[in-house]
Every structure is written in C-alpha cells, then in structure tokens.
Amino acid sequence: MRIALLIFAFASIALASAAEPRLSGADAKAIRTVVQAQLDAFTSDDGPKAFSYAAPSIRAQFGMPEVFMAMVREGYPVVYRPATVSFLPAYRERGEILQPARMTDGGGQVWVAVYKMERQKDGSWRIAGCSLARTADTST
Image (cartoon, rainbow, N blue to C red; front, side, top):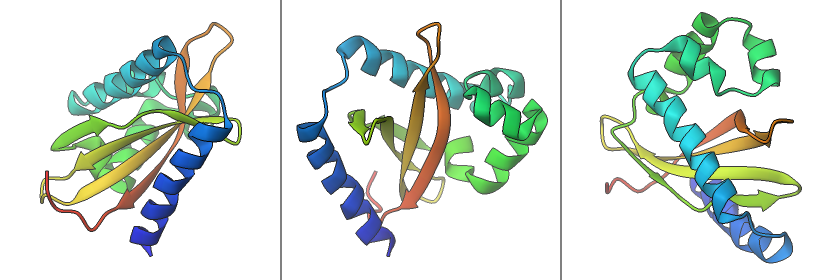
C-alpha cells in the first residue's frame, strides 16, 4: 500500500509540475532552508526553535513547544532523528506548496517526508504539515 502511495506521489509530482507554475529558485531555497532549520532544531532538542518554523495553525493546534516536540518524537521518529536527509524538488499541487525529502532512519529504512509549506504575510515560509511514507528501498 505504501509503495502504491509513493508511486502515486511521484506521479502527482510529474503531473503537478506540468499543470502548475514552478516555484522560483528563491522560494525553493527558502523552503529547504526552513525545513532544514527545523530538522537542525530537532537534532539539538531545541523545542522553541523547532516550533517557530511551524505555521500558525500548527502552533495553535499544539499550543506549546513541549507538546509539539513530544508529538514529533513519538509520531515522526525519522523526522526527529534522521540518519540522512536529501531534498527532492519542491512543487505545487492543487494550490499547495509541497517539499518532499528522502530520509533514512537509524535502521537504514528509507522514508519520504512531504512537507506542506505555507507562505506567511511577511513573505516567510512555515511548515503547515508533514506526511510520511516508508518505502521499500533500503539503500542510502
């Protein structure tokens, strides 16, 4: 099932890139910077900093950095402590900006995390959600 979802996600990327305008290089770089900064904050166990990269809707949902960090530790362990991370091209799909990242966990299992990004009124980017799918690939 997850393999089918992953194939669907990559097919959606191809279709979305043809149907919707591409992101500017500056936006793509800014988005990767935000996601990487949050990953770095997780590595440092810096809850307030990690929480600061979340969109207002996520901050409202979890209320406090400690609650947010507990959710990430328990529900997204590969995001909390990835062994490797490589970014795939960000894309637009149905009006949303998505940033996929290929991650491996400590056991060598490969995952794809797809970050939903949201531009703020000040022009900055924040993370509005993350979907995670394990792949059959175990190569790093």
